[in-house]
Image (tube, rainbow, N blue to C red; front, side, top):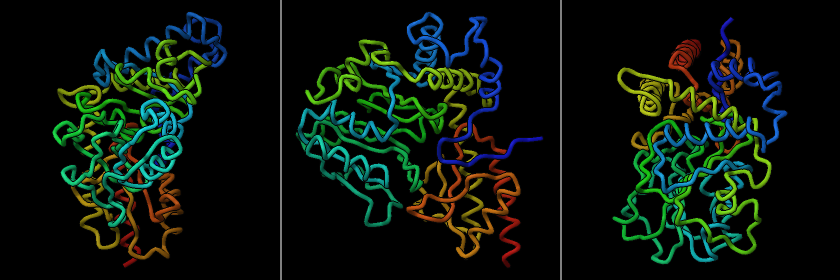
Length: 368
């Protein structure tokens, strides 16, 4: 029997191949006589897993040699504190507000630095993006924070800004939690990127940080040593016990991503092509429907998180019950915005989106 399609925003669906491989290796990893969850993080077995994960991720995302890859804990929410503890030096930091997550980042950073709003889309309900030419950047800002995909509001920055062209010498920090590995990254425009793994890269528990080497070594004295990027980098992500099983699962996901092809494309480029096709299918149906609506401007709609609303919201529970019966799970929107949300991450096949559209079409007909 086919598995249901899981549209959860995170922890999210994972590739079946990855889950099956992990199940097969659960009791005995590669003849070691141990499960990965039982291994010492200092042992050669886990060392091999960690090295392979870092190597595969660097290859997958084309991370340049002058960036360090860190596997940390605490999720994206903790990074809202860890980033300013490492990069702000207690000075000014610019925030571009694009939705709920960047608002959380601004609030948390204000505990450690002078966090200021350089631009915001709050006035239009987080349905557009402020044009970079309108950003009011502080010349003395230590960095500029941008959430490049807002999981709750369904807004995505499809091209990262060139801060140098905007007259800023500050590094760009991006929270790419909910679309990492769904498209290539222009590292020439990024100083640091962070994201929780539980949407596109694996299970909850491990947080990815990719940081330019020149940004290491500037942590505030109050920064806990386990969160000091330089200490973490110097200790190969093993200053404290890392989330070993989550790193292992992420590593399997990296290998799965590298195997993916779409025509002549492979890896992240293949995933980008698939994600564009999935998003176009779902948004295309919503736009032609008189029963469903998406409020985000077309030029900044997320390819990963698609919020939508029923014309008659009194039918929300009936919609969700019918979807669940049809094998379409976790479609309820975030409590702060309501409605529905379909998260169509890398592990979601186009067949899942096709099934969702078919259900939405049938449900609409019953409301006529």
